[in-house]
Length: 259
Length: 230
Image 1 (cartoon, each protein chain N blue to C red):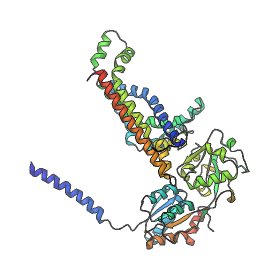
Image 2 (image 1 turned 180 degrees about the vertical axis):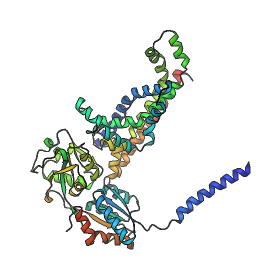
Image 3 (image 1 turned 45 degrees about the vertical axis):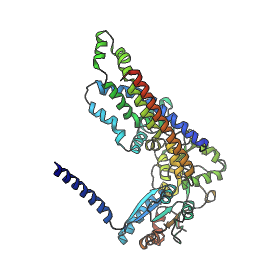
C-alpha cells in the first residue's frame, strides 16, 4: 500500500518536474512579438508573412486598439514592437520610458471616412452643421470609443470641426477598436460609422458616404517603435523592413498614405 | 471613502437594473424548464439539459455573437421583434438584460431543479387523491416548496448578471447609460489614459456590491431555513 503511494507520488513528481523543466529549457524567443493597431491587421499580417519568407524570422502579431495595447505594454506585456494608430499612445509609453530611444518613426498615414451599410448608402456632402441626426434616424453612430481609441479621437475632432459633436455624442456606439466599429456597420446594427479609409477596403458590405477632409482632424500618422530593452537586431530589422520601399509598397496597396 | 463620479453611479444603477430585469426575464422560463427536467421524462430531455448548460461552458463572447446573429437588427428574431413591437435589443438595456439572462439561465435552472427534485412526490400524489387539479397542485404544493431553490437561483443569477462582461459587450456594445454596466465601465477605465483611479473606484464599488449580495443571500438562506425548518 505504502509502496504504491510512494510510486504514485514520485510519478506525479516527475511529471511536474518534466513540465517545469520543459518551460525552463525553452530557448529564448527568436520570434518578434508585434502589438499593432487593429486598422493595420491586413497590411501587417501580409508584411509579417513576407518577412518570414525572406528572413526565416517569424513574427507573432497581436491586433487590438492602440489604447488596449499601450496599456498592456505599460503593465509589462512582452512586446518587441508597438505600431500605434496615433502619436498620443506612443507618447504615453515614451513618457514612461518604455520606448527604445531613437526607434520611433511615423512612416504611414491614413484618412477618416463616414460609412454606411452598402445597401442603404447614398453619398452625402459634409458641410458645417450637416444634419447628422436625420442621417442616423433612431440608430447609432459607430466608431472607436473617443475616450481612448485613436479612430474615435479623430472622429470626435472631425465631428467637432463640423459642429455636430454635441448631436453625435449621445448617439455613439463606442466600439473597443476601429474594426469592431466597422463590424457594427457591416452587420447593419449601426446605420453610420466613422472608420479609416483603409478599413473599408477590407469590407464589401459597407460603402463610403464621405471622406473627412484632412484639416478636420489631427493628421492620422501611425507611430512605429521598438520597446525599451527589446530592440534586438532582428526587431530593429523588422522595424526597418516596415518602412523600407518594399514595406511601404504593401502599405500603399492596402490604401495607407506614405509621404 | 472615494468620491464616485456621476458616470460611475450611472454604471452602478444600470448594473442593478440589468441584473433585475434579467432575473425577472429568466425566472418564469427557468421554473418551467426546471420542472420539466425534474418531473418529466421525454424525448430529447438530455439534449435540452445539455443545451441549457451551454452558456456555462461556452466563452461568453460566443454567446454574445450568437445573440447578435439571432437578435440583431438583421437577425431572424431581432428583425421580427423590431417590426412587430418596435423592440430593439442591440445597444439597449433590454438587450443587456437578455444577454445576462441567457448567461445566468443555467444557474437558476440548476438551483430550482434541485429544489423540485427534493420535494416528496407523495405530497403531490396526496393532493391529487384529494381532487386537486394539475395547476392547483403546482401552485399550492410544488411552487411554495420550491421557494428556497427559487430564492437561491435568483440571488446567484442576480450576482452573476452584475458581473457579466463578454456576452454584453459583444451583443450590445459599451454605451454609457444604456449598456455600460460596472464591468464595462471598469474595462473602459482600464483602457483610458490615467484611468487607474477610476478603475480602482469602480472595482471598489463592485467589491462592495458583491459583498452586500453575499451577506444578503446568507441572511435570506438563514431566514428561509428558520421558516421551513431543517
